[in-house]
Image (tube, each protein chain N blue to C red):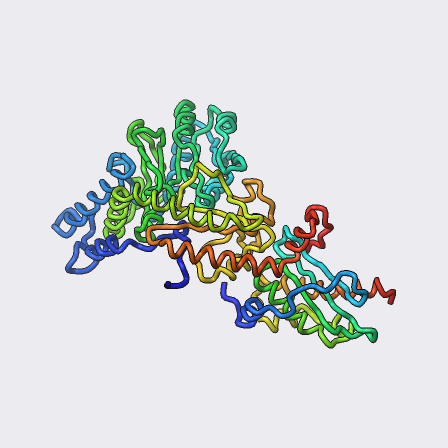
Length: 127
Length: 404
């Protein structure tokens, strides 16, 4: 299957691969997907005291589109407030990466990962 | 080194230059372009002679009589003709058929079509090795079982079924035995004087011949009858009508002739290359060879790489042309049904790669492949949350996944 140049770029040079220290209280983690489905995304965000996402990192087990989708959202969430980040839609991701219809679920998973990370942060910080 | 490296010989092979050379002599005005069925002039006679020589060359490789060879468009058509043809011809004797879950779709889908016609089909499980348990086959056989269809060499994992033993069981039960040998011809010894096989499918493009041509072996003693599936001018003794494509048939004959001459040496070379590949890869952690380790052809090696996903692995391996056990690239998102039938988890089935080597594979290509595989696995595992969890000692089966 032919991938778009953007998918290939993110796949070959993924942005923000890695993980933050687990015990850092400013870090929240969202992990979505299942190995049996062929993709698992782990998205971590580092949130400042005033609720801005300062940094983000990901690790993804999945196809090229899943890796590209998670790499892209780490770029997009940086500098956004939690509420702004929650507005990122899977359709924006799919459009930016020109994902084919069979790969739309990758963008949905990336959106879910952001939401899961935000929910994790909120549950830890009681807001 | 020329990239990408072709390691997908089980999907198709390039035409051997010697075969292409031969094939070209049967196309143009200067060549033998005639219709082999034309009886009234030398154009036809020459084409017919060429077809009969090719028929003998094919029969020669498998120790059969040339009159037992019926030309078709390929193994898919041969499987259709064999299974439907025999099931329909012998339907008064019974309507029960047996096959195996790891067969090619050309067999499985043909069986499904027959189910819609009122036939009953038993799909046998295979062992974790990919091999059929003969006791299970024996237990599944009934007096009304008319056709058993089992492939010689599996296309995904390369395991070789015990065709001789299955043949004995079928003959004892008076059951027609069909064998799909698309991946076997030129790779394993096939002696149809010894094997109790009644019908056998062949393809040219898996053995360095062109696409679009194949053959079905139809036993004469004891005689096997088939209901024709393609009707017309009564070619191929009424079993398969349609003008014979002389150039393709001649090419298939040449490919089989070469295979007979070179098979032994080629297999020895493939075995060395396969070992070199496996030795270079097996030191990676969490790597598994799929299918029986001994009953296999040397050309096909199917390996699962745990904690990396198959399609991204294929992307990382862009300099080598291989195929994935994950059908993620198609719309289905399903892992290989063959690997699932071996009992592999979805994850391992998703993360498997078939490396198939062939006539033009070199040692340098294998060495480069090993290097690329190591780099790809390192890169993807560095990116894989599952790998981290494995390294942290987390049992992935105990994790509550958020499935989607």
